[in-house]
Length: 342
Image 1 (spheres, rainbow, N blue to C red):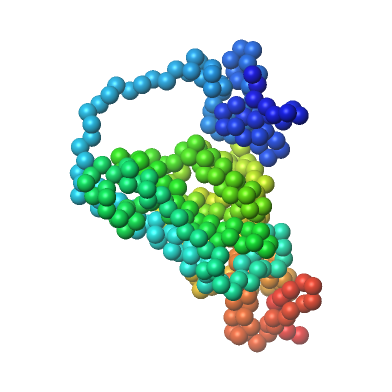
Image 2 (cartoon, rainbow, N blue to C red; image 1 turned 90 degrees about the horizontal axis):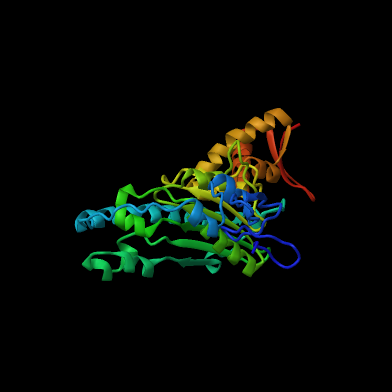
């Protein structure tokens, strides 16, 4: 029976996502006479040409012969896991510091930033420590894994008015890290789609826009990058409620969809840049735009150039202190602007 809902709305027969303008039809099952719809991501990016039933007959899986069980070097494993844990904590702590040192953040579809008095009241933390304990094959599995190995920590800020969720999340394949250590492969599209479905459910429950930075210790494969960032063949589409960027394997490697205007102003929080570093970078761009335009409105400038409003304001104040021919003015209904002094 073809996948669908009452009223003619169709779903992808492989991933279950609704086929719409945001996720167009890629094709139908290639088995003769089968009308099952397949979304563009599954059909073109993942290369899945058959529905679940016909995948088994058209593309039989080849099972590799069983090999000997791996020999676990406990000390080497725990040394690797501690290094991986440090990388995850570095990502989360940099995101938390970058966020909480800013008294204001941009708001999607608004020219005015949101002032935040107490970030701690908005913050919640979680991890996958129970899952990691079940995976560890060594006697120390009963130890406190939160201090010894990666557990995919997540740091979330939930803002009620206006509704916005800001989150940094570890998404590594914990099983592969334990089993394969440094040889673990980049995360594949199946893992990314599961994470995005979970984020979309959270955004729906809270009736919020959700902005997320997703970190993988082993990076992301080409299918993940094509799905979220896009490529010349398949430009990425912006989801209605969720905007996400991919980070990893290096903490500073951030990849995002350049057409997602909701996400762009938040990228400095995920890059690991301090406010001082972002301000210095912003100041050079701000002066260049002022030389070209004679007047620069800070909020649109910050949004269009992927700076936070806090960095743009700090850069503007620095320029007025350093130069005697520049003024910072606050225009009613428009906001702050930098202009040449007459």
